[in-house]
Length: 329
Image 1 (cartoon, one colour):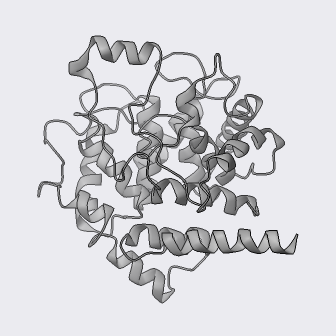
Image 2 (tube, one colour; image 1 turned 180 degrees about the horizontal axis):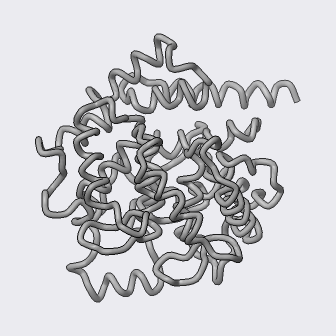
Image 3 (cartoon, one colour; image 1 turned 60 degrees about the horizontal axis):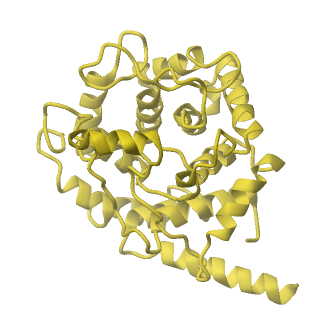
């Protein structure tokens, strides 16, 4: 037993050391704070955070930003998928960037101006009403950027609470509540609990029960893309997406996560890392058929890392889940 535990400890340390590599300061910063529990005033944390915008994934994205604060085109923050401002901002939020960087503040302020709707949520620029996926993704990223106290961010969380299903969960595009409508759960996971109203708490509890009843994967016929791990996520769902927000919301001990956790562990490589399985749009069935018939509307895939190779983004998220479980994998 002791020898087995030692092997696991060495494997985890090796993976952590890999994530702490100075080639990707964003991953280093997130590893120090999220996996190792280092405080923001720790010298290594300050150094890593200060380097996020100068080297690695975030620096490469910021290097393609126009001086006006947008990517690709000033005409739309949403299109083209997945290259325009909306998608780049979602990634930069995941990488630990904040509004303290003037380039982020300029882009995020314009993002709010374009996407905020009169009904209280967020929607694509040019649309008149809010859209669930956009509300959840935008609210989550803005909280991570440091806009927690912005009134339009607060209204977006109120919108998500009011627009949930009375049976628990959410519906995107009026398709009925489903596992793909996960974005509000991820947004609430980063929203300070002190700001949750009683209605928000019920929304999260009922949403969690919806996902747990389905063990994060039971919805119609088996859907193989959910078993593949991706980054960027955009608005797509997979088992790692579900595990990430469910454990962040405090449901790590629920036995109904066992299936998803078994998939997570089985997908771990012998070296302790996880692979980037695919880049979106990774779809099957009717969605794939629709894109085949409308190739001009197909999104342009965007990736930070190479498919089929060990991924620091996927590995960080997987280790974050295991860390919350206090598990010896």
